[in-house]
Amino acid sequence: MLSPGLSRRRGGVSAGPARRWLRVAAAAAVLATALGAAAGTASQGAGIAAVAVFPVENLSGGGIPADQVRKALIDRLTAAGVRVLDDGALEGFIARHRIRYTAGIDVSAAASLRKETGVDGVLIASVDLSLASVPPKFGMAARLVSVASTPVVAWADDVALAGDEAPGLFGLGLVNDHPALVARALDRLGTSLSAYLKTGRGAAGPKAADKFRPKVSFGGEPLRPGVTRSVAVVPFFNLSGRRDAGEILALLFMRHLSTVDGVRVIDLGVTRRHLLDARVIMDAGLSVVDAERVAERSDADFVLGGRVFRYEDYEGVAGRTVVEFSTMLIERKSRRIVWSSESYNDGNDGVLFLERGAAKSAHAMATQMVGLTAATLAGRGR
Image (cartoon, rainbow, N blue to C red):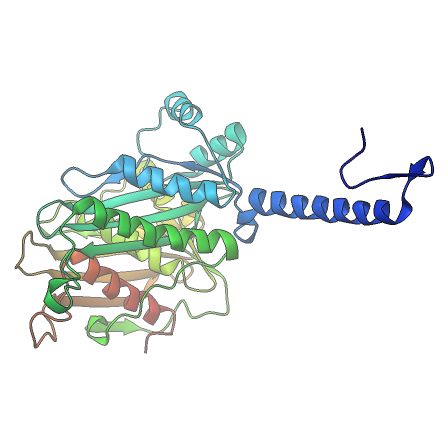
């Protein structure tokens, strides 16, 4: 049998066609190698090649499409060439180490997970809004945590959509199907994750309106780029009527601070573990003493916390959203408060005509408020 493309001549192989065939074969081999490398190391820009996807956290107070959310994130990781730890191995690890909290990861769990499974990252998703009524609403945050050493946030993003946020002419932009809205939200979040895995840079997020800037702030710009600093975020003290509002604000601050150059955001699982170990009960909010304990145990330069006074949503076609919180940043070195601010917004602020520009969910408004607070801390929000 003759190899394809080769012919016999004078008892041997024709030299010219042979050389051409060899060049084609070599080029094909190089291309195959390149494609294989691209598939296997698509996350090279992010430095994360193997990930464990934790169960989805439910902060909504109702039912959530947890399976749909987790599958969509796994599909994005797989498409980017990232190895995803299979469910059996993950469940075995959680049971073996008796891990009850999977909405974050602490230092000890991260070290064990890395050693036993070979993963170098953990993907954690938290759904805080999921309403199937008409118009539907959906909101969530997700973060990819590096477990190479102390767990820090490598990538984070969030999304909040309402079916009536962009009705358009004759209502053609209305979305009344909850699964379709969830799919749209997951696509947006997945696109951000894919971009990070390819480039190693997180998403800055959409530009927020000036009306969402802090109403009052004290301090300089302690997180101005130039020096690498680490920040530990603790759950906000919740004085609102919305359950888990303190955790939601903490997640949003982690998400926005992770996009600031030179800022390393220590995962919430680390700070939560240290608060439990130190038996800290923040019965009135974060104190300097509590912050000092967290900073020392997590080796953080700053600790950020605050209080949530109001976090109000509505269901249906009409209602009002209100978000009010205060923020405090405490420096470990000086043991003092180097920044504080107060933020308050009504979803109808600045709305003059047919609810155009109104915030349809507390999450959609809160993420803009938090984003501008974080930007001001970094000296880029003035």
